[in-house]
Image (cartoon, rainbow, N blue to C red; front, side, top):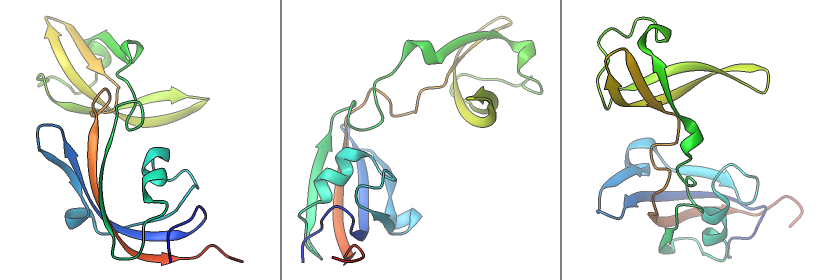
Length: 149
C-alpha cells in the first residue's frame, strides 16, 4: 500500500538545516500523525510523502518558499522598550511571547529580539526558519486508508 491524499499516516522524521543541525525530530516530539492533504503539515511535505510505502525511508529538501516561507521585512518592527512590559532584562537572541491582534482576535506569538539600541528594540515576528531551505528524513510507520477508499 502506498500513501495517497486523504490517507492518515504516522511518520518518524528528522528536520535538518543545510549546516547539518537537527532542528526538530520525532525522537523528541514523538511520531507525527496527519491526514495527507488536510493542511496540517506543509503542502510540500504532503507531496513528498505521497507514494511512499509503509517502512519506506525518504530524504528530501524543501526550498524556503516551500517550507517556512521567505523572511518578510514587514514582520520586523522596532518599538520602544516601554511597550514591552516586564522586559527590563532584554537581550539580543531572546524570544518574547507577545500578544498581537490578528483578524480581530488577540493571539500570543513569538518574537525574536534582533537588536537593542538604547530604548529601541527590534523584534522579528518571522518564523525562526523563514528564508531557509530545510531537509527532512522521513520514515512512514503506518498508513490508514481514507474512509471509503
